[in-house]
Length: 165
Image 1 (cartoon, rainbow, N blue to C red):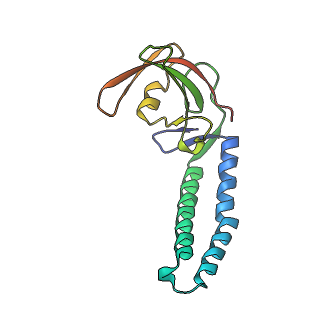
Image 2 (image 1 turned 90 degrees about the vertical axis):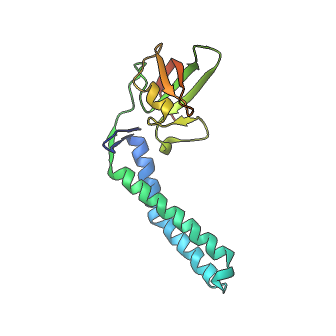
Image 3 (image 1 turned 90 degrees about the horizontal axis):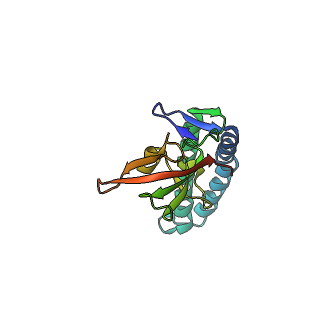
């Protein structure tokens, strides 16, 4: 997945299908389920002291936010191929870097939007300081990015390969 400055998000067909299925579920069956939870909690009585009602309304708010996020993302999505395995760092790639040239101090992460975040691998956005520093670099090249304290950090690109979930 790649985001550009024009707010276009590039997705693989698999990612697009997964996000579209999530949107369809949240827009249909999940809305029905949360409405039933709210109705059941409302029947319990005084809404000011009804924890179940307030929890269901909060869940509904989070669900509707996710629906809006997915709708916007899919409206601006362009479906394309996964990045090439050419050793150039790009969104959708698993990248291994070494900090300050120390081959023992490494980090492997997925360069992608948070839509791809999972417990399996750490994810960095292409817009993050590290992500923008390594994006477009080739294996073997050095990259710099700005730390929160304003100092520059250097990393060496050790590996860049397409992500396969």
